[in-house]
Length: 334
Ligand code: DGY
Image 1 (cartoon, protein in one colour):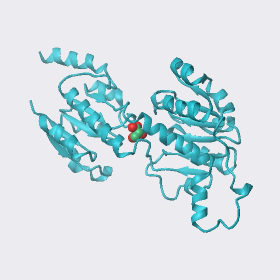
Image 2 (cartoon, helix red, strand yellow; image 1 turned 90 degrees about the vertical axis):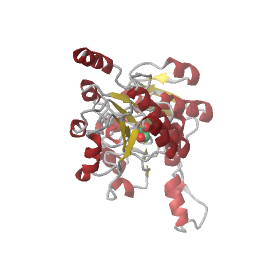
Image 3 (cartoon, protein in one colour; image 1 turned 30 degrees about the vertical axis):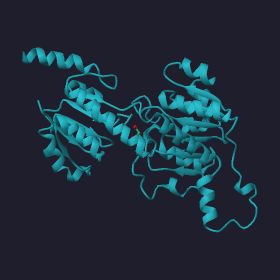
Image 4 (spheres, protein in one colour; image 1 turned 180 degrees about the horizontal axis):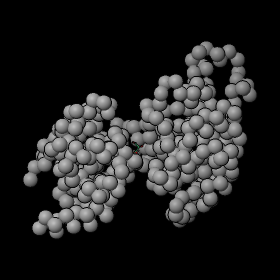
């Protein structure tokens, strides 16, 4: 049976064509909450939705009484209330695999750029301030053979650990809900508690998913546990860090710097103090933003949605427990 899919993010034509082979597709622009009438109208008849980054609120789900499946073009699925989806019998899939290496590249870029002050000194050079050989005022800090602390050693964390240990001779420390024996063996990764990691690492890189347990994981107290010479890199979600506390720590030079791809509010407001701090490298959430990776993610998300609409629960399903809910409602219907 042909079903209706609402796509709320620009995806390649080839991905739309794949969806259209089996179902009807309505493309809806991602808009501010105040002007969502076209989206709400489209949701009224939708069986599937595909997109990313837009918060899928209970109000939007209430407007979608036939919704069977949601597919996010992202590894993170914090735009959804997973328990609520499950209660409603809606299957959620994500794309955890396609962006691993690309996001690890970006995390390492932030680490290097912050340590060697690449953005700050490129701007300084562009302004014509390079008038003599550089001195201590322009020196950065070494990355190679330093200690990298990874908070969240999953797929991306492991890819970062590989770059750090095998490419740059770094000691890798990590904390994670469970031990990662593979990374311990392959990259010499050493398990630490969070306070130990914060106290020992020269670079702290956040790669945990956002959840109730990780929201504001790094606040004033944690920033105080870091070395004054350490750099914080956040490629997870802005809400994992208490941003006001981070701004204060950077202002007071309680840490050396920060490389940030994610923020509490995105897009980052232009008046954010982070944008005026020379010791901050701020990027517009580009962890997975290469053409190749974004195309691969969109294709995976489309295939995930087609599977889910066909009633298949695959390995990228975030809430496999939804099967129980679906089974019960099938029995009631029968
Ligand atoms: C993800 O996939 O979660 C990245 O942050 C890009 O959205």
